[in-house]
Each structure stands twice: as C-alpha cells, then as structure tokens.
Length: 291
Ligand code: IPD
Image (cartoon, rainbow, N blue to C red; front, side, top):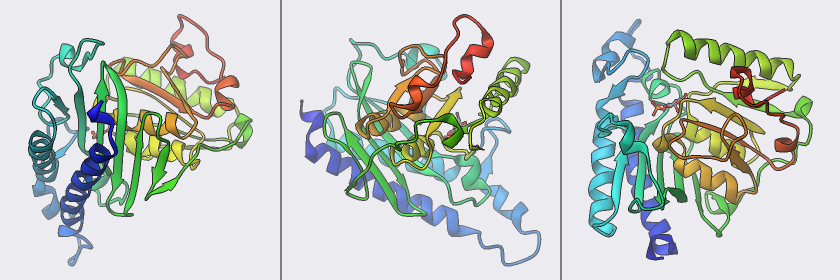
C-alpha cells in the first residue's frame, strides 16, 4: 500500500513541520505580554465556536494548509476529515472497512492551551485505512517534538525509537484524563465519576494537559502510563493510536471494549497496566475502566 510507504511518512512529517511553523508564529504573536493586562487584546484572534471549544484563525489557516498539501501529494481518492471543516454529521465520523483512506487532521490539538499561551499543543495528522489508523504524526512545534509511527514500523520521537513505560502497578502510575468541552450534566457527572475512580485506585499522580494527541504521544514515550477520556473525536486520536501501539502499548475504549475510531473515547496504556484495570459492564462507573 503506497499510503504506508516511508515516502508518505516523510511527506506528512514535512507537512507537520510547515503546520508547526504556522502554530509557532501564532503562539508567539502576542506573547510575552508587553503591557499589563494585555491578554484581552490577544483574544481578538479567536472567535468562540462554543465558549469551551475555541477556534482561532491559526486553526483555520493550518487546516487549510494541510488540506492543500495532502490534496497535492496524496491520491485523489483519499478523504480528509478535519476538525475545522467537519460538517457536524455523526455519520461523517463513522469510518468503516469500506471507507476510502481518510486523513484525520487536528490543526491544533490543545487550542485552549494555545489561546492561553501554554506551550502544550500540537498538530495531529493520522491516516485511517478501512476505518483503522495506519499512520500517525503528532508535532509539538513549541518544544520541537515530532512523534511518528506507521503500522509495523515502530514509533519514534525526533527520529529515535520510543517505547511505553514498564510501570506495572497503578500506585506507580501517572494517569492523564481530560474534561473535554461538553458541560452537559451527564458529561460532568461522568467526568467526576471517572476522576473519583482514578483517585481511589491510588495512582501516583493524575494530570489533565488539554491535548488528547499529546497525551497519546506521552503514553507512547513513557511519560504517562495511562490516558483515559470519553469525548475525543477521530482527529484527536487517530494518529496517537498508531503511535501508542507501535510503542508497545494498547488502545481500548475506556470501558474495555475494542477500540473504535468514531467511538468518542479512548484508553491507552502499557501492556502491564491494562491487566490491572478492571472493567465492569453496563454501568456508568465502568466507563473509567479503572478500579
Ligand atoms: C481537544 C483536546 C482536549 C480533549 C478534547 C479534544 P482541541 O482538542 O485534545 O484535551 O479533552 O477531547 O477535543 O479542541 O484542542 O483540538
């Protein structure tokens, strides 16, 4: 499959670097603040799609650039599913065995971090073939960290091989989860339930970083031992799923079912801890996957 060649990975890495340059420029544009209380002026750069899910001019420009570059370099039969150009239809997220190869693009994963000048955001580009992620590139341009993988080829950080951690017990584990942008009562309850279960499982540390893609990249290189979230879209996690699995990790749905790209959830961990996580079927509480 030409889609999986080294040339394709190299092309996508090049596109991610170009995107990264645009993100870096946007990130440093109005920061560090030169006058007191300057944050309000930087806010003019973004409008609010939804207050908890901001989108900036940079998100739109980066997605347009990646789309143009993929159209110019990849076969015309390939589809593009991008966060900012998503038509809002649930069916558009549903990639099946019959779906054409689909590029899942998040121009800036961690947009809220970007808006608040927190240097933890990344461009994420994944390719799903037959609904299964096959290639992933995640680039944090602020730290200049490029994570790459393709199925069967191993996972890499800036060209060096990476592996998931060898942590075997939850009390030694650093667990990351996210609250996402949905503030409905049901989602808030689910999140609180999830965090309670994680804390009760006596893990060493709990984190929320604001970037699903980087959470997966960090599981892949052993910085985090577990990442669990209900809510992410295919563009947040397609690339990271390949990178975690190629680093020796495991990806499931948060309640332990097999991973589904459009399932709006993920649990990623190493092959030891996955055996420590106990799943209970059919209960909301089981959604944490952590006991
Ligand atoms: C979001 C971030 C966040 C996660 C959400 C994602 P965005 O992506 O990764 O950490 O909780 O599920 O949608 O909106 O910054 O691209």
